[in-house]
Amino acid sequence: MTEAFFGKIALIGIGLIGSSIARDVKARGLAKEVSISTRSTGTLKRAEELGLGTSYTVSAADAVKDADLVIVSVPVGASGAVAEQIAPSLKKGAILTDVGSTKASVIAQMQPHVPEGVHFIPGHPLAGTEKSGPDAGFEGLFAGRWCIFTPVAETDPAALAKLRAFWEALGSKVDEMDPQHHDKVLAIVSHLPHIIAYNIVGTADDLETVTQSEVIKYSASGFRDFTRLAASDPTMWRDVCLHNRDAILEMLARFSEDLAYLQRAIRWGEGDKLFDLFTRTREIRRSIIQAGQDVDAPDFGRHGTSQKS
Amino acid sequence: MTEAFFGKIALIGIGLIGSSIARDVKARGLAKEVSISTRSTGTLKRAEELGLGTSYTVSAADAVKDADLVIVSVPVGASGAVAEQIAPSLKKGAILTDVGSTKASVIAQMQPHVPEGVHFIPGHPLAGTEKSGPDAGFEGLFAGRWCIFTPVAETDPAALAKLRAFWEALGSKVDEMDPQHHDKVLAIVSHLPHIIAYNIVGTADDLETVTQSEVIKYSASGFRDFTRLAASDPTMWRDVCLHNRDAILEMLARFSEDLAYLQRAIRWGEGDKLFDLFTRTREIRRSIIQAGQDVDAPDFGRHGTSQKS
Image (cartoon, rainbow over the protein chains, first blue to last red):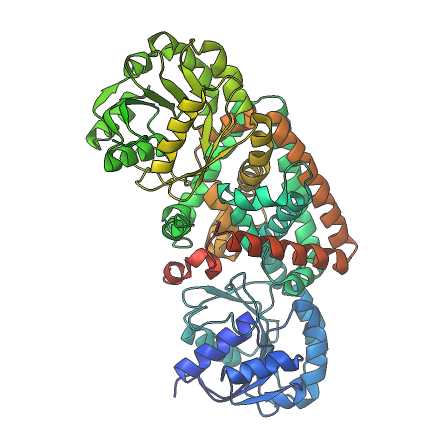
C-alpha cells in the first residue's frame, strides 16, 4: 500500500478531468472505493456505464461521506456551491482538493465552508484537451504534466505530502505557488490564448466578404490551430473568464497595446519592427521544445494525417 | 509522358516550398532538368548536397534559360526584383508562376516585367510548416492541400491546364480565385492567425510579473499552440504583412473590435455573452474536422508524444 493510496476517494464532477483521474485511480489501484457524483443524471449514468467508480450518486454530500480524499472537478463558478453542499458530510481528517483553472477565486469560494479538521489544498493539474465529458477522459492524461498546488497558510504538511504522492502516482510533476501568482501565470499561458482563439474564430464567423465555407475550406493555413482551443468547454471557459477577471484584463490590455503597435507598423510599412518581433518569438518556440513542453515535429506532427485530407 | 511533364523546370528560391517542389518533381519524374537558383551561396550548396536539382546557380537569369516552367518561391517582397532579373532570359511559351501568400501585390510587382509570349499564372499552394530552408522541405507536402491560382485576364487556357496538371501531379487540389478575394480570404485564414500568434508570444516575452521560464514551463496549457505559428520564417511574414496591408488591417480592426466587446463582457461579468461566443466557435471546429481540414484526435494527436515530456 503506497503513500498515494486512499481508502475512499470521492470525485465530484466526472468530466474530462474527473474521469481521467477515475481511470488512473482504477488502473493504478489507488483507492478501495471511488464514489462519483455529478448533478446530471445522464452524465452519472454514462460514468457508471464506463465503470469509472464503485458507487454513483447525484448527491455530492452523499458521495463524500467517509471519503479520505475529495476531488472537486467542476467549472470554477460552481466551487462555492459544491463546498457548501458537502461541508457537513466531510470526514474529519479528509483531504479536500480541486482542479480549477483559477485559484484565488476558488479559495475565496470554498475556504469559508471547510470544516475544522478537513485539509483543504487547492490544486490545478495543467492537463486537458479540447474535448469534454466523461468519455473524453483517458488514462495517462496527467503523465509528465505539471500539477500546481496553492496551499493556504494553515495547510497540514502531512496532508500536503500525501496529496503530492497521489498526483505523482498519476505521473504529474508537482509545483507550489501563491494563488495570486498562479492566476497571473495561467492568465498568460492559458486564459489569454483561449480567449484570443475564441475571439478570432468569432471574427472569422462574422465576415461577410469571406464566406464561412471558405474559412473552413482553407483553414489549414493557420486558422485551424485556433479552432482547437476555441472548441473547449464553454461553461468551463465562461467561468474562468469571470473568476480570473483582473489578471485576464491586465493581460488583455497588454496584448491589445502590443497589437496596436504591430498594426501601426503594418500601416506605415515599418518592416524592421515586424522582423524584430518575428525573430524574437522564434526563440521562445525553441525554448519550449528544449524544455520538452511541445513536440519538435513540424505542424505538431499532424502532417501525416492531414495530408490525406 | 504525362501532361504534367516539363522538359526543364527552373526553381527560383529553394526554401521549404521550393525544396518540397523539387523533391516531388524528382520523385514523380516530372522534369528532365531542374535548375535551382538562390541568392545565398550557402543555401545553394545545401540544395546541391541534398541533390534537389540537376544544375545550380546564384543567377536567376541563368537558371530560367530554356526552362518550360519557372516557379518563383521567394518572400513576396522580392517578387518584383526576381521578375525583372529573369525577364530577358525567359523562353517564349514558358509558364511563369509563383507560390506567394499574397497575390495582388505579386501581380503588381511581376506582371509589368513579363515578356510577351510568356504565360504568367500567379499561384499559391496552401501548404507549409513552421520550419524553413531547403532541409525543411519534404516529399508530399502538397498532397491533399489546396493550390489557388489567380489567373490574369489574358491567361492562356492551355498553359493554365498544364500548370493545373502539374500541381495535381503533386497531389494538390486546384482552385481559381480573383486576386483581391484571395488576399481577403488569406488575411483571415492565415495572415491574421500568424500576426496574432506573433503578438501574443511577444506580449508573454515582455511580462515582468511572470518570468519567461514560467511561460515556457507551463506553456502546454494553451500558449504553446501559438508559438508554433510564431516560429515561422520572419522574412516571409514581414513581407506578407507589408504586401497584404489593406486586407490585414481590415481583419485586424474587426478582430480588435470583437476583442473589446469580449473584454467588456469579462469586466462586467456578462457570462451569457461569453457562453454564446464560446458555444458558437465550437461548431466551426466541428465543420473543419468534417471537411477533413484537421485531425479529430484530441490535442492534434500530439498527446502520445507530449505526455512523455
